[in-house]
Image (tube, rainbow, N blue to C red; front, side, top):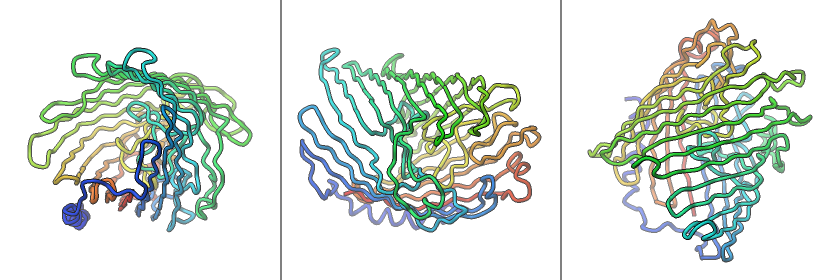
Length: 458
């Protein structure tokens, strides 16, 4: 009933405004074959009660973030110059807020790259797209590399990315990139919305390839990937000296009405890493980690087109902090919003040292209105390793593995399709086990998070 009270006013508004939907979205500048320019602005109000992060236990936070984007493309024949300017600013935050450069980044060149397309290069009907410059991109399921769908200032990369599409539906990707270091990174500068030019992160190199096969087995799609991540300690950029290779495979059937769908993905990660970014920590640990995601769903032929999903995730953790090995899975630049709930100032759980099972129900009450309800149980994969979302750790393992139960609800409405969307969401975590014992008396028994956002595109 509490969730219905939160969403009923918004649902009523969406139902009323949906009658005013236009057939075609309005644009300030009309697109042509040679030029495209589009503007958008997202405004999101967030409140968090019952902070769970180390050093801030039990506190409350609020945030109003406004992100403005100007994106465009200049095309000539098979070549194009693509640009995206991003400005993300906050108000209402204070010194206790968990701000990061993934939330605040003012006057940023998010993307600026040249794209060249070659047709019929490998076979008749094939296309090869090569992007050179600063860019964002999604790799496969988006669990390892992605443009974050929720953080208002997602990570960019400088380098080369190529994608080869064959006539039979196969798609090959290969890339060699360096992540862009978003600046500034200190809390005072983020609170003041200071502007500092982003630059290459010279401590990290990223290489990889992915192949998508649309019909490996009748009606099933598959992906195979290999990603190499190399991090070298620099004086100004302290890190954990990770040299990781992640091999992944995925088999899935897309959702379809009155048909069982599923998604199974497994990753093996190996190499070396260090236990911390402390300068004095120079011992390389043998890194061996695994990740598994499995879900099954069914879309019913019923009013509101309901869909039920059962989900399971396990990302390995470090079994023993003193054995010279590191078994904690590193999700690199993956997006976790679509599996584990909102990020930004929330972000309770990461795809690392975690085991979680749950279910999700989605429905479409009317055209352009989408509703989602989800529930998940969360536990640590290893009791002696860190709870990555909070920074809390019990090296003795005496606090157990159980973290708590999370409920989530989201309502999204295309008020004016292509021009205006409204979205509201609520997440509620009931902590137990490890979360209660390791945090002591200062750990809140529950955490509540609410957001309301609008996005205008023109």
